Image (cartoon, rainbow, N blue to C red; front, side, top):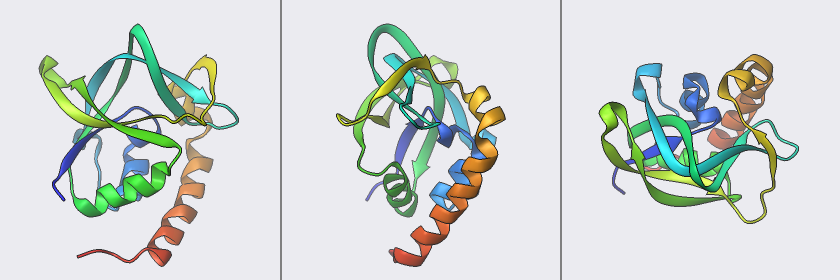
Length: 149
């Protein structure tokens, strides 16, 4: 499996979340600012995290995570579960350079609220309990999923 680039627009923009999910040491410098045109980010109903859906003349600010190795890709896929649809999109990265990146889109069963999801607001209100839940997810994932060579 080749290394790929992801566009993160939700909880994975947080280096602590990205580190736990990928199993790698992810610093803020590794998560480069990027923009995805033609989409809207909204909060998933009854959740604290977002999903995105198409919306003309709109854009979503997020982060590029480049060169994800195979193990990180497996962990990211498990974290996002099967409720999202994975799709290649063109994303405008640092310096305005366009890059193809994998993006997790809202799946057909996901319902979004009308409110926009705000990363800074999520950090203030939900980050700490989310990280505790994520620590349990990480332990369970590592206990039940064999590492591939």
